[in-house]
Length: 103
View: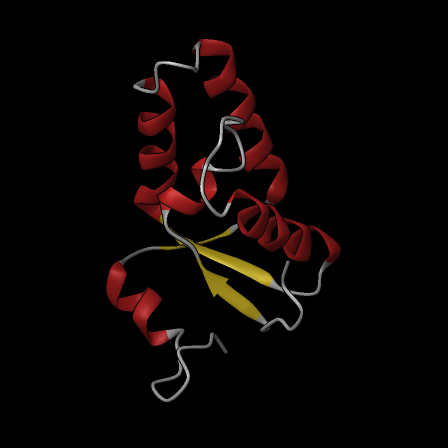
């Protein structure tokens, strides 16, 4: 899936939602690979504060998900200890201008 990786990734809700909705999501394998890199400590995932709300909202309104899916997602996200950055400007500061990689 991901042959080379960076020290960190800034993810939006659309990537994280793929971790919890098991239907045929495009690039779900790549989203899961990013999560695995984070879990293994090889990379770090950064998100904005609103990302958690966006993920839960997307799950809530997905016709194939239920309240239990949302609750399981919330618990899993808490267990992952993703680095939450207060605002969009702070997220942008984590990226290097030339390659789009996080520091």
